[in-house]
Amino acid sequence: MTILSTLLSYLTANPSPLRLPQTSLHLSQQAPIFLASPESSKDTQETWLVYEQLLLSCLRTGDDTSARLCLQRLSDRFGADSPRISALAGLYDEATAQDRGELEKVCSRYEDMLKEDPTNMPIEKRHISLLTHLSRTEDAIKALTALLNHSPNDAESWSQLSALYFQQSLYAQSIFCLEEVLLILPNAYNIFARLGEVNYVASEKKMEGLVESMKHLARSVELCEWYLRGWYGLKLVTGKILEQKGSERAGVERRKVEGLNEMATKKLTEIVTKARRRDNGWEGFDEAEVEAARLLIDASDAKTVR
Amino acid sequence: MAQIQGQTILRDPQLFYWILFPITIVMVLTGVLRHYATVLMQSAPQKQDIKAIRENRNLLHGVGLRQNLDQISLSSFVARKNYLVAAYQRGEFLKDQENKGKPPANPMTDPAGMDQMMNMLKGNMAMMVPQTLIMGWINAFFSGFVIMKLPFPLTIRFKSMLQTGVATRDMDVRWVSSLSWYFLNLFGLRSVFTFVLGDDNAANQMAAQMSGMNPAGGAGMFAPGQDPHKMFLAEAENLEVVGGQHEWVLDGVIERLLGVPAHN
Image 1 (cartoon, rainbow over the protein chains, first blue to last red):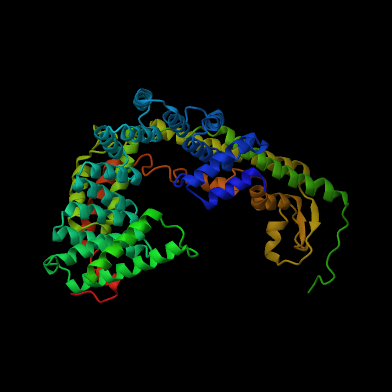
Image 2 (cartoon, rainbow over the protein chains, first blue to last red):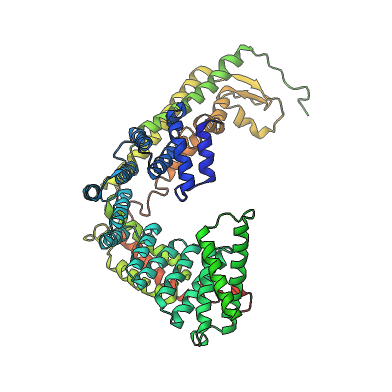
């Protein structure tokens, strides 16, 4: 197999290599080999996709020379003015910046570019994430609302805005943004779970908020049967409801909450045992999440024994 | 049962090499040429300005809300609906707010519309010119030949398809005239082009015609000549109507999950 097809099959197997450190490391180790091979000068769609992914993972792992070369070839091919390439170039500058001053410089360059061409969405998004990174949260929120004003059907931005509002403890706004995401992606189970989590935090242990949160979490595990985060939240929230009295007032019978709690415990136990044994097909879970689920189960067990 | 033994026509075997192959090769080559000519002539997709994008996407926002209203609670939906309906009726998202009520501008004077038309014209030219040339060429050199005999029998209906340019009533349908060979090539080379040029080529006649008919295909919600304000008003009305059918997905989710019948 040639290097290009190796990389392509690797990318098909790991569609988002940036999520895990191992995969980006693996990819960036292949980068010098690929860049030196004659195949890197092929002008096909796949080649350029590979270039983009290599650039990103090289930046992540600190191989700046390979990243520079990838970026150079991409901008030779597509022109440095293309929105996508300019965003990648900006990303490179951000990653290689030495101190805060340089980052601020990149940021003001983004602002100039946006003044020139307000339709350049990739740069607009880079600008926002750089603002977030510089902890200028208020500016980031302002920039995001400006973006959402002209593109209200951008799910990514809505969820980012929700996270920023959540940071600022503006829970109602955060929930609003997550609901907007649902309007664009109606089957996003992770967003339902996130809504449950935000509702839980916002409820301050009041019954109505807890019930709301429980419903959202229940919906998320209805959509995705093995969603660890959803079950975790469901167990936690039902436990809190059972600690208090008066779930009937919020319209849910205690019997049903108990049923949900039992169900969540069962599923969590199953996930935890199988994930820790590394059974076939159960490897994808985040280890920290599995560990947290184990602690939650143990804690509730201890309580019932007492 | 008149022609059991079949007709035999004495042909020069050279006909095969000097007509059948040239026509095929020329057809393939023109297809390839047309593909590259179209690629060359294509103007870069025109950049929309931010206001047009805003107009377009805010309308889509309303459509999204209308389609997925069941995902959010009634109060959230109503709040959004009231905001959007009011904004739509004010014409807040319009590209040019001044001529809100005025009839749409003539699409001929709209530069964006002009550009689109120019593209269409170019596409049509790339299709028409070679076709006319080759048709003339075939007619001048090869008309009236019978070039080959199909190895299988056909019904009489195929006569007009296979024997264009040869006005012989009694000839067996299996004989193919040169002009017909041209037409068969014209319509039947699609898979060859797909093989040579890749999936989304501009060589094919039929595909080019199809896209010529529907130039707007996915380019935007607003075809030139349509009044965006009217579309916003229509969407506002749709939102009002659909509000009556709200049914939250979270209602009864606990019962669904536990597998018990919902309480009513």
